[in-house]
Image 1 (tube, rainbow, N blue to C red):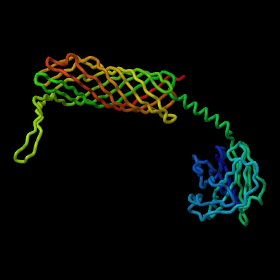
Image 2: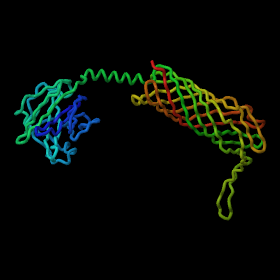
Image 3: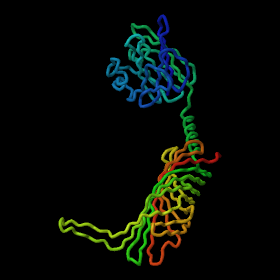
Image 4: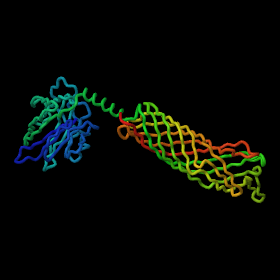
Amino acid sequence: MKFYLFHLKTSRSIFSFILLMLLGYQVKAQDVQILLPIQYEGKAKSKNLQHKESFYIYKAAVNSVIDLKQFKRYKREFDLPDSVNIILPEMNNAIDTTLLIGFIKEKTTSLGHLVLLLANNYKTTEVTFYIDSNLDGNYRNDGKAITILAGTPPINIALLPLDEQPFNLSLGVPKRLSIEEEREALIKDLTRKDKNTITNMLAFELHAGVGSGKLTYQFDDLNSGFPVWYTVSQSEKNIGVALSYDFRLLRVGISATFQHLFQYTSYLNTRFAEQEIIVDPTTNRSIIRENVQVDRNIDDHARSRVQWSTFITGRIRLRNYLELQPLINVGQVSTFPNEYLADTRINIRAYDLPANPFLELGIRFEGTSGNRKALFFGISRSKLWWKPTNFLEEGQVNYWSKVINWKIMGGYRFARRR
């Protein structure tokens, strides 16, 4: 709640107005503006308002002794007591009682007045104020309580401190929503936020990312009686599109991703004998001889490939605008050109490379960025079952291979507005 409160000293000239605001009532003020108060951690905070003083909501129960220790933390430059005694007024039919504490400083000195305002029915559209007009702490020797309806013009009130110059307050409550109206507005706002999400409709997706992985294959050579294995590291750049239907708790769709690959130096390892343990007689230290021949490969893997897939993701709502989405992606990878060229400097072998299946598991975070629009970021791990055609020659058995990739991906999704 906000109030506009105006302070006018009755001297030769007008020194200041004090502004108190209860929900955005606009009145032009001069010199000093005070915001009274937004209910935020007990402290009134201004929004684009210049002010020198603030009123605070007293958090403790209102009784005859008002503890000012918390209030003094914000007014260290003034010599204020730890507490003050007040005589409460007769308050009937009060829904709640709120105490508002402020310190109205003199413009030319460090002195001022501690002002306590009691308000009943503070959260309604009909607020009743009890004013200690002579600032003596006794609310029973003052005038009647003042009830102000929301949206009505401000009411001028004279404050008459003993043996001091009087000043005026102008107190107003702006028009605002009732509790029922606030509840309806909240439901409407939540419904609007829910409508902003992509739900029960087709959505298009653009995505891009980078990744790295390792291709490994191995087989047994019956002629030597030992295994042969090969490993190469690869990096990739991805860009693609997807089409999905978004249900409330999951998404299903199809995707096409173009991948550009870069391969690093690779080696073909051929074991020609069992491992040996050799002991140095002089030092009595042992070493292991692997008995592996290592040939540097100049293999030619395809530089480009396209990943075709179908996918399903869950939708776990973390916030109104944020989702966690576990991902399962299954499909095939086609390479261009569709061959694998193995070159060990000794011989060159070319193999056809058909479309190979893959499985991808991942997780991503998606945030709503507008009406039917979303941005996402995720990480995934995929396995590709890589096998060229007629790869094994006579005397070679027990082939197995794996391609494991890790990648990060981000993108943008959008749907046609309903």
